[in-house]
Image (tube, rainbow, N blue to C red; front, top):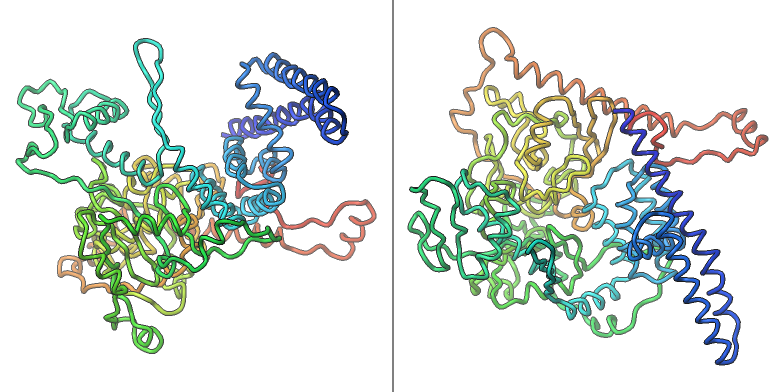
Length: 631
């Protein structure tokens, strides 16, 4: 494992050297001449000659890069563009690649997200994103990095983002091109919510076959897309069983294999502050003229979050809410302002949505849900989420079976800190705003399942890209079926989404995770390396009131109360739970000790020697990959 780790670090350094060399070559052969040309006025004939020389220089640079790197012309042009962007636009983020904090692909994602910003704006973006990637010891998957970068862009230039979104929608298109061996490629550029609807439909039809269908999942997806264009609602199974009930493909509106006519309804989740649903005054004027860029962007305001995509503008969320086929439904029960101040959380207020929202709830064929909870609105089109039964695999009104593995063993650290510690649903902010139904047993309630779909974007394992809708529900602290009072409860702060693969890895016991006081998860690998993950991404950063839910837990059933310790002492599973709890406490203590050591001030003698030698006084920064864990 150490060899693989060192190899990846060496590749990061080699990538930075390659990009720096490409940039130096571009600077010597082209950029300096271009700067001189732009700075020196001349007559028309001189300008034409200079422009021809620059064009020839650009082709020469591309030819050099192409031959030196053994790549084609298009790839060479992309390499030059990437190198220039790294060095001139986001040098701080570029340096993090060489330090091993992020991968080259992550750096390219950040560069792509920054291209919409001007020169002054991108300086702020580079500084803030670099701080985000280093100051919190946190690892980000590519989707999480895209979301963090998009959030910064929308904070730095909010009006510009909305103008570009509206302009981008005008560029929606579908293109086709022939490929080799009798194949062809189709490409669609569509609004994000339309792609989510298409993806959900394809995912659903791909699951309308039996388990013996010989096609792979990508093949079923491709066939399912074509079946949808032909008007079918099922795929048609290709297994060898002649009596397979799914063999016949059925058209839209026909009864399925169970004799049921299904009306497909797509599900989309959008989170936005309720107050932002009203059109702000002067919105058109602000969009017409961008505001100047300051040293730091304003606090997040007016943004929405499209689950599966990332941050969206408030105007985009309002457009989705204004659809004629939308239907609104509250999440939980709002606690009135008076009750929120001086009444017990158990008293649920009768306040509901605004009259306009109530009127909206009475019409529309699609279940476009807006939760009027905690001054938050959750917009979401209900329906099938495909063949998988994950966090989003059931209707909010149907608790359904739990999706965890046989024993649902998963690391978490013991009881949550007092007051919730800022954890989702744990009462981290003073004063609950809504009440929702929790669970006293092993299976999550419908409200808990719905809540998980909103606050967890994806699997919580380090660098995992799988969306939470395709994940299984896992108890952070293992649930003890024989003695539930000894294990982790089924609460908002104790359950999380884990994809099937990482759920199995965690159940095996080699990877141990623990909850940190700030709500993030510390994962420890079998070889002792540590990775910190923010399980909620930027959702709670945008909507902190989502943590202000009071969960009403019903009385446990008689069956669940009969779980006293078995005769003869603790069971093997209980002993394994105890072992993991010890490891979690040890890992958190080791991390805190390392942080304390890094923050320890130098003595006056050490500081004087450092100044005499010309060494700068060290500042706190993310640990290098050259050093010990946490990485």
